Amino acid sequence: MGIFMRLGWFFKEEKKRYLLGLLALFVTAIMTIIPPKIIGGIVDAIAKHQLTISYLSLMLLIFLASAVIRYLMRYLWRKYIFGTSFILERKMRSRLFKHFMQMDQTFYSEHRVGDLMAHATNDVDAVRDVAGGGILTLADSLMTGCSTLVAMCLFVDWHLTILAIIPLPFLALTASFLGNKIHDAFGDAQAAFSELNNKTQESMTGIKVIKTLGQEQEDIEDFKKHIEKTIAADKKTYQIDALFDPATTIILGFSYLMTIVYGGSSVLNGTISIGQLVSFVSYLAELIWPMFAIGHLFNILEKGSASYDRISVLLAKKSQQAPASLALGNKPSGDLQVNIDEFFYPDNQTQKADLHDIHFTVKEGTKVGIVGKTGAGKTSILRLLMRDFDNYQGQIVWGKQDIRAYHSDDLLEMMGYVPQTSFLFSKTIKENIAFARPHASEQEVRKAAYLADLEADIDAMPQNFMTEVGEMGVSLSGGQKQRLAIARALMVNPKLLLLDDSLSAVDAKTEKHILDRIGDVRQGQTTIMVASRLSSVMDCDEIIVVDHGTIIERGTHASLSTNGGWYQKTFEMQKLEEDLKGGD
Image (cartoon, rainbow, N blue to C red; front, top):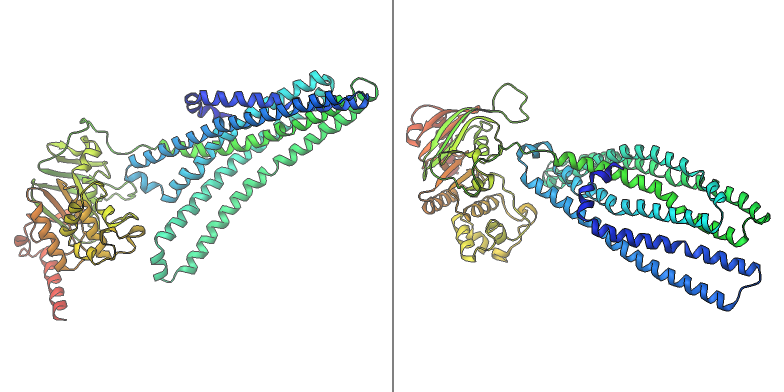
């Protein structure tokens, strides 16, 4: 019953709706005791040869009236109890989604997408069942059971009633024992479902890679293993669940046996009438649901409890981002000073820092390039600028304030970020470009596409800007995806534009067109470019060379291309490769 206590906050919020539902349920329970009484009266009248048309008509009219009232009351309790449970579902889903939106990169490193989806679907459904089916089963079983027992005592015989309910404590013990078992089993089943969700999501996302490498059969076999594990966990849950009904049936059989033996002898000795015995058997049949409900209730509660525990653990996770000290609405501007003494990724198990001794200043309105080997730490610097992680030693100051003092919304509103691999939504090209400004004019969208050198490609498409890009931009080439992402970032006209090797999929000529156009419209605004192709950063005001998480060279293209270091060697090699391609 602890799950009811933990959901107390919701029951208090919706107490009026639940009270109306419970009132309708109470009237339904009262109406339930009328038909057996009527049937018993008719049987006695027949046995005594006193049944008349008027008496039968009156009884049938009362029977019909009780049926109509029960019908109306059933509608009301379904509306107020089940209907209110869907309000809880909406609140839980909204709370989870809002929590997901507020969490940082560390959270998403610890939790896979499939697992989060399982929490937001199956687990929320199980908790909703507690607020709907759980409340209904508890209240209905108590009201129907109690009203029926009272009717059995008043209208038949209290001795027979006590005898018939003797087996009930055994049912409660059985339900308690099986309930604990099903709680653990359902938790395992939900965990297995989360893993299956993860596998499905991963396979669908990477379907091209799987097919290209010819790993379809191997992936199918791996998927089968996840299915078998999930089925085994579900099977265990249902096996335990299946024990509830047989146990209830056996215990109920003892009640019927005692009723027949003792009730029959009572009729023979004249303690009760044959009509009362018929009524008692009908009342005992009404007790079938409350008895079965005990097992059903424990099933719902234990499943809901296991799911609520999983959701609570997730909601208890806190963002690792430092709390903002500045009021909302403070927008950063000015020079950007980066002073990172040391930074470790959360999953770093070594003693070696991922970044160390990174110190540089980006003057407002200038363009800075960051280059280096793969894995040198270039993207890590940008991730710290965007506050993906705050757990570093040192400071990043923008507008004379540590960026950790700003609210994330204020900070990120001033940035435009384009990663090497861009995520596109399953919408039109126009909707993707105008994602941050959905009400932007067609002229503004077209201008952003022009700056990203994408306008001609779009005009060549059958539906132009209304072309659907497909899931994750499947209908576009790698270069088109990158350019669309650049157009999307330029739509917000950011104070600070971060380009993370975001032109790697386009040729050098197209890259130059794009950089020239961006440079023309971003006069006085700051740009930081991470690049693998050194020709991308030749025009930067300063170029920083990173290796093994620290700065090894810095300067302009002119100075770095003659100092004999990594930059000069790499530039000459890349230039030779371009010349050879040109010769071909």
